[in-house]
Length: 100
Image 1 (cartoon, rainbow, N blue to C red):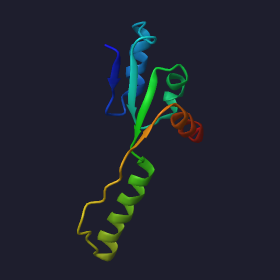
Image 2 (image 1 turned 45 degrees about the horizontal axis):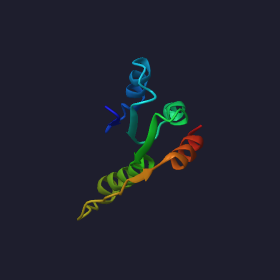
Image 3 (image 1 turned 90 degrees about the vertical axis):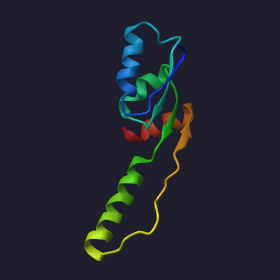
Image 4 (image 1 turned 60 degrees about the horizontal axis):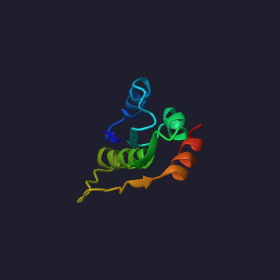
């Protein structure tokens, strides 16, 4: 086993388990979304990439859509899609430092 893709918010527990098993040098992680708690694992080179789903933007759109539906009786006639971004080391460090 050399790489794990963690498709949920479980990246931190997976990284902890990798460290506890003594596999931090050989097993790497692709995370979904960026959490402040991931910073030490990014710095150690355990997390080598992430798919950023733009959670804040998703939340904003969801609240606006719900408000339009409830307050203005506006129903969207199509799906809203937000393409995730692939982040590598510098992008992850930038994103994590902005969360502090």
